[in-house]
Length: 373
Ligand SMILES: Nc1nc2c(c(=O)[nH]1)N[C@H]1C(S)=C(S)[C@@H](COP(=O)(O)O)O[C@H]1N2
Ligand SMILES: [Mo]
Image 1 (cartoon, rainbow, N blue to C red):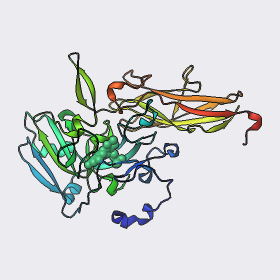
Image 2 (cartoon, helix red, strand yellow):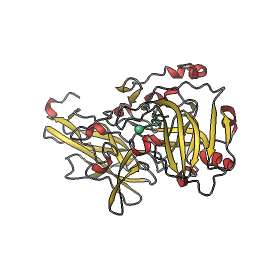
Image 3 (spheres, rainbow, N blue to C red):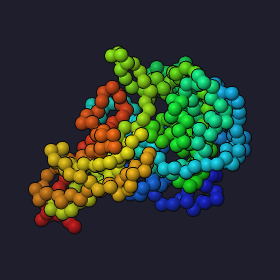
Image 4 (cartoon, rainbow, N blue to C red):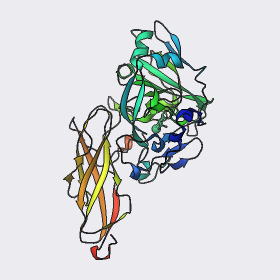
């Protein structure tokens, strides 16, 4: 399993605080978000979200098939892909179900806390270059990305046969330069869990769009209606006043507090640095407000990272903890360059996805006299 680490074996065993198990097989492992410190999430700390067992793919026989509504369908092997001009970009990957555990009443699905999100550097070939070579037909509407993993999903409606993991991208997103057919993460070849040998990276979209173990790119003329498009990873939208199912896409503006942690005990009358991160889809995070009194009053946080589209921005806020002992609720709320702000409440139309309201982090403040410092 770890054969891809052969050339830098020391890195495979670099110390890391490890991941939290949400499901053991297939692996669904969460980043302990309170450990997040660096701009780039170390690969060892990056969450893993897989619907089916990891497929074993031999790079020696790997073929990527580009076909459908194109003039020149073709196959490309691993070496040919690696020989093409590449780009390296930083992008946030957030699972659309991240923070689900905060929903009240509780909902089904992996009980992600704050750590089904990470910010990594990805290297690969722009999908646009492959589509250009294939020549999309005028009526090519969407691009279906399909992985080599297969199985039968557990959540109804259960499909009649085993299915593969496949998602479509609107044509005008797929041809943007930022969408990568990636083979490296944080400067190393992808690990099996993160899609080795080749995966898609769709910056600005929720994680489900970034198909791992990618083997097929198919241009289709009609909206793709697959399971992961209509049943899972879909929400209730409105068309001419009527509810319709739409596929999730763009990441919504969000900020999260990494430290302090839920129910952490803090000394009173001392400066506690609240630390967190914020991200958005096709816009930039421009402001973070922090409340330490459950939303009654807000102060402005300071960014630790500059604006870089599709990457996250870490931030900090120095809080002089009250002298009055008790329970305090911390909240962080981001604003973006388009004037958007995180909503006060979760939007029910998104079901158990897109949990972007400010998430309450309750902490205890002790009497300064009793505090152990
Ligand atoms: N082939 C395939 N691609 C996939 C998935 C999957 O189960 N199979 N899960 C998706 C989901 S829901 C997310 S959030 C991201 C997670 O990527 P990571 O495991 O590298 O963090 O991969 C996406 N790509
Ligand atoms: Mo996801």
